[in-house]
Image (cartoon, rainbow, N blue to C red):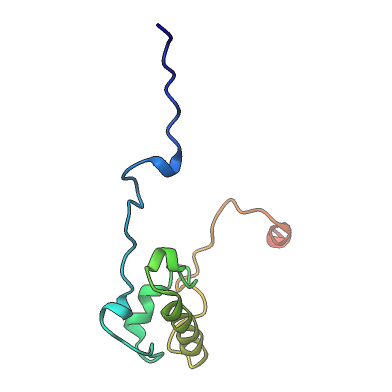
Length: 106
């Protein structure tokens, strides 16, 4: 009798895992919101990382239409000083080399 070979399980064939199945529903579509308001700072903060970057659709779960509205609203809120451009608290990351570190001792 011939030896049966097990074929390796490919990544897309796995069941479960961190992104098993369905995506998160868009928070704006779920609440039936037509336009994203740039003045709603508490809602926009959920779409910004701790370093001040706009999070992607894959992380936020927003649909394409509302994600572009969120990005536009965050940029407008930054422009009128409702949201910061960068992260608050100026903690520098250590161990980061570069040409700017050369002059630090002088």
